[in-house]
Image (tube, rainbow, N blue to C red):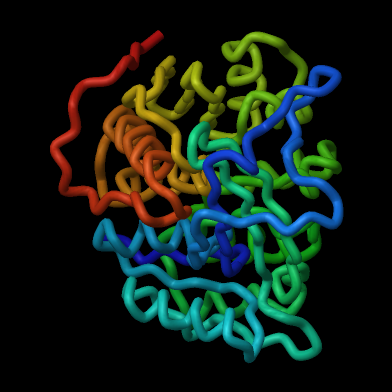
Length: 322
């Protein structure tokens, strides 16, 4: 198995779950939580505590699938930080490179979840996970990973560049799942793609980087920058292209399940793909597991509750080589 470093956020997730007060209401073409009045006291059915963030979510998949998972993330000396450390210990994720940030609280998300529809609104205070400039790319020399998995660094392109260049110099492969802050600088981000082995974006994000409307167009243009490109498209599945093996696949969803909570679905897909790919599975097999992992996650409440371990018997899914 591989040694994989996850660089990204670590958050405590607090779920407020209710079956009627959080039900979305359509107003002017938008859906809002419309039953809560300002100043009202609302009884919530249940409250759940979990952990999340791109760094933790991806590292959890890698660890459960048998890889040596190391997390690089920021937390604080508080109860939320303690909860994160306990989770890392339980999942057997190496926390040696988790940093404590002074003057900030551990990042926390309050998730308002309608238990009937699975619709949610997320209120996030990034806290210690707002910045990543304290991490040194030179730490990769001590870590000696096979892969580096990077989620959003909140637009910190300087830190992103430092890690990408160091990884390239060491022969470490990189999978990148950028966030909205990185995508706000498309030209700069595209210049960094020469250091990336696998890029994961959704359809909207892909259109911010390259021209095109159809998934095939977007994938073709992005494959000019990155050897392996995966573009997801929600319930429509997505497209993935590997220019080295000359494989391109259109894929649907793994299974039509009732969505209880979509939190962490993208992280589950990306880390699920790499968990299999880094373990020697084929491009196609890795895509199937990625979709299955994402499906398992949305079927449960919490970003990591449904994460698979790689030993499941997976059934066929819609996937076609084009």
